[in-house]
Amino acid sequence: MSITQSADKITFASTAGVALSNIQYISGANFTLLSSHDGVFLENLGANRTVTLPDATSVPGKIYYFKKIDAGNIMYIKSVLSQTLDGVNIDASPFAVSIQFESVTIMAVAGSWWII
Image (tube, rainbow, N blue to C red; front, side, top):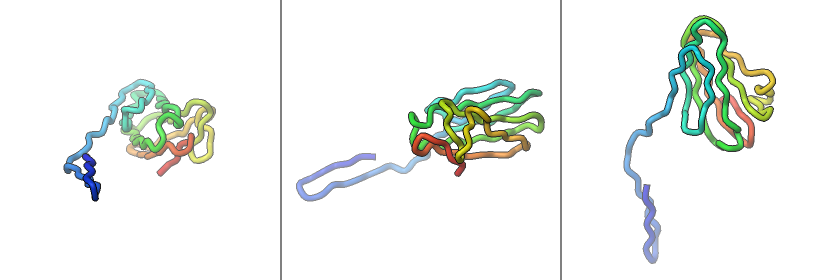
């Protein structure tokens, strides 16, 4: 996107394109998301696994996508600093995704996480 200004107008111009998503495929491990990531496909491989979110205050407006791709065990989504997901402290009690192929999309808003 570009912005140009002349004496009597401001022009905004952009080029069409597709933004690539940084989706992580995690197999049999816990994982900590970074602000550069956009989501996780998680394969538990025989044990419960935890995906830890970054501090919501450091990524306002950030959207993350989660998908549990295997049939066994639970994928937990955990926060830091006692931050909440829809009002529940998921640092103390991580959010559980237990159904194969279930997906969840969340967003950081005002220092908390929200399912959207």
